[in-house]
Length: 634
Image (tube, helix red, strand yellow):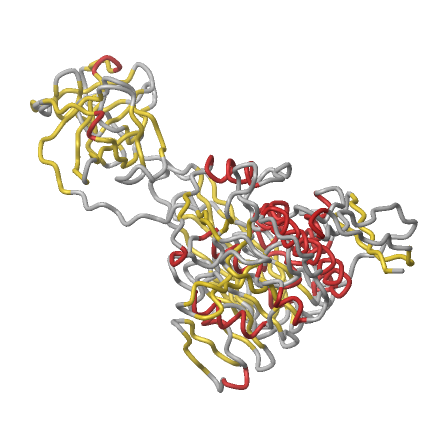
């Protein structure tokens, strides 16, 4: 009798539970006395579904991992012609070591990660290794891999690796199920391969030697070396463990040898470009325009054959040009140098014109020069020079050139009438603050091209709320104050009414505190409200866990109202400053892979993440700097 873990795939995600016990069929030795592990984990409908807890997920993942380990041992015994029966994978650690794979404790793994960190790691490798450093994440991915394989726990290494990629945002097709398809996807997306084992970086996707079908027999994610400088034993994440574990990188009775690894192309150092003086060219065929001077840089446009260009620099075998209003690089093998001198400009005296249609304003007197603006039809102008078929003009405070074919000459100068202000508006009309808080109002002038956009600010009661000449509001005491902005041109006004409370209560509206749109969207989703509804203090004060990872958030303004917050994950965003000093219940934080320069926190907080984000609060006094991150304890 054995306990069976049941997988159920629902619209809400992966639900897993355990039921009863059933009789297990005995396993029989196959050819060459080789054991073949049962290939299926039971899948059935159940009346009541419960979300799997961490312990159950780990247990289920270990069952699948043991089957995957045994599968590789059995296959190697058959393929290499061994006649002795291979030992089955057992639960005790000594037998797992004999099979060439062992689970290892977290401290050893973190030591290996720290020793390998920074070894030319790409962004995708960094995200993948960070995600798979969590045993819970590995168990989750392994369980999903088995479901993707229809409940079959065998041959799930590609399901595991591709699912982990999808978890970090890489859109590997869900149908990817073998190494041939996996490699085809990676190569089609410009991933590069290397067989140099010393170049492995955390998160590199590794492949073993080819099997009978000419493709690798196994794939795994490299997570560090067991011993620095020794390339025989590595920490890896794959379908053979419910956490990061050890794998022999050579050929053993339990493992096929490492063959090569795949990674996204590293960002290349720019090729120095020398300035080209009076150099011009024409394309001999359609050619790719790249963002850098190397074939590994991305193509942002295709330049047609016969296109004439000014060459602004030379970088190795590439010419630097301007195309589609953007600096680009084209191969010199697709360009023939020509003589193209700038058209001389003669000065035009008392010459004026009006456009017959919208026309491009260029930086030079030729269609190959870039367009920096579009002049509307009926625009009157003073013409300051003539250059071939182009008129020199001043537009948007800049010298430009327009085609003479879109301009009719006029006899008298243009009289320019200053554009007047029509109205002014503010970014909000009401708000609620707590005494001591600050806020910022932003004014918008209509029309946008009004000549005089100056404004003044005034508070109806400075004892309740004050405003400075930039629109910054400071709440002073309880009451209501009206802030008015007035335009200098035309005295147009707009107002915002502020209600000031001495302390916060459940009905205090805090919507305006969430200034980052991505953070605000996540909050609305979390509290189950529409974006048109107000966010109240009572909506967020009792939330204990926030997962804001990889949401492109630039600031967490408003986080101070999550006064019951215990756990916060915000890695992989664009944060530079993080103030958690008012989150006094917070005890766990993962803020890795941001651009943090300052962090404010309470004395209970224990940080989680990479090197400069792991100081323990007991080691900190008041202020401490760790790898350019200033940590202040309040």
